[in-house]
Amino acid sequence: MNIDPNSKVPLYLQLKDYILEKISTGEWGAGQKLPTETEFQELLGISRITVRHAIELLEFEGYVVKKRGKGTFISPPSFSYPLPKLTSFSEDIVQKNCIPGSKTTVLEVLSDAAVAAHMGLPESTPLVHLVRLRTVNHIVMGMHDSYYNLSLFDDNKIIRNISSGYLIEQMDKQSVSLYKILENDYHITIEYADESLKAIACPPPIAEQLHIPVNDPLLYLERMTYTTKHHLIEFVKMYNRADIYNYTIRLTR
Image (cartoon, rainbow, N blue to C red; front, top):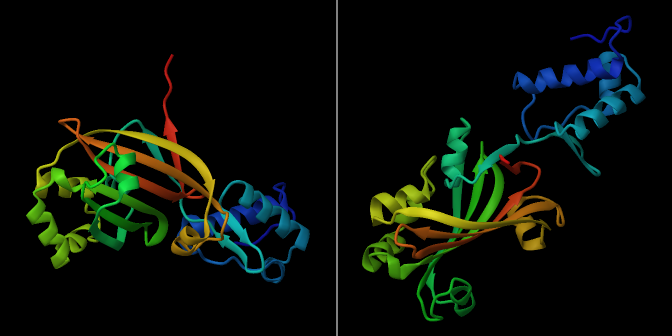
């Protein structure tokens, strides 16, 4: 595409369309660095002010993100999740024709008095502790820190599957929902969940895991998930990147 100085369309809008075309065709993918202002000048024969105006507009609309000292990069895709439907992360992503992914970093059986108390359980209740990095199209989107009430499982089976690595192998398979694993392998049916949501600044340990700067905005969610018998099965803390992850809800009057 050439920039036409005789067109009625302003040059900065022509440049914006040029960049959007590159993104829409997949020639420039998420996370890819844009040419510099100087490179755009030389490539298209336009002024630096024109380039800057176009980039600022693209940044405002969420198509690109500037990283101080590094340059301007194509933003990862944004995903919207409708409330109040209860689905797993993998189910959400598959419905959007994208590729979900999971990398388990912690899987253990423990007793944690503080977590058990938060779940309304006796302090000595054994818990399955699971930490996973969640990805969309191979981009790290969030970290989920989960606890499961072990007393609701067939203890020997799940402990055996944890010890052998079989459970990790299942969870880290592409497009496999943990809720489906609970239902199919352990006969635990999820009925409903209570969830809270707030914005936080990303703390250092989470930033390291998500490969983002400290204090970048996160959507922090806490979910309490219950079975059909109203037993609390899951307590999960979700740290999701606010630049990719958002919620939508339909309100009626």
